[in-house]
Length: 333
Image (cartoon, rainbow, N blue to C red; front, side, top):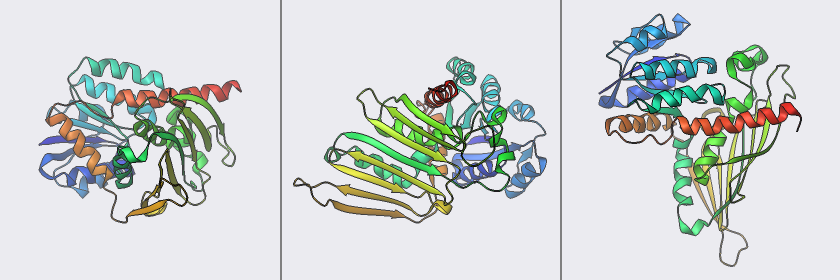
């Protein structure tokens, strides 16, 4: 049984704690820490026999902990990862794993010199719609992928411009580094190859803050396949839409559950004579299990000593793209 310690007990930390609990005999949550003691106390009271540490430094010193799960603000993700690896812990760190590209370099260098497993939290890959889409894309009948068009947005809330996500020192940027990593990661994963930055437009249209509330990206593969991505916190009705176009079909994924609506995958299958396509609709109204599946896979990576599918190098490639977009817009190109 793998023993987990969670650093960061906010909403995401609570989701991760619940996922650990659902893994049964495979994993156990034994410790937690948060700069807000009340959050740590709330999480600890929700589960049995959990120690609360006053600092994350104390938690990673606990020799009984096998895995450190980090769900803090962006400004401390890389540092805590580095120190946890240094102590010989396996690490699960939430995306984007750091505020920028350069923060991840020493973490990767250290991880390469250790036997620790490190995974970055890109749970959207494990939503039922994307797991189904991946299988369809692997079928020869779908044809070669041509392009992806995706939108991901929420409407924020009153006072959002004063929260930590609006502070570049804490977040590293705005909407592009908040929800953007999920769309970039999904596009990389589905194309099955690296994406190169092409162009972008980054603006703050509504919120008076030093980071962007909307980002539009165009990315390309070496084969000129295109990913057109838009992330927003001025989407007054929470929206998730991901369209995948192949030479003989189209997949449309809508919703993520909760306020984003029921997860739905629509498969438009082109006929030889073209015209109206055959249409297949898959709906997944049940609770989101992506958090559990992702952690289960990481536990298996550790137990079976196998290569981690979504690790620091994936986060590095995502941050490279984000940093290029920020640099491009800063220079006014």
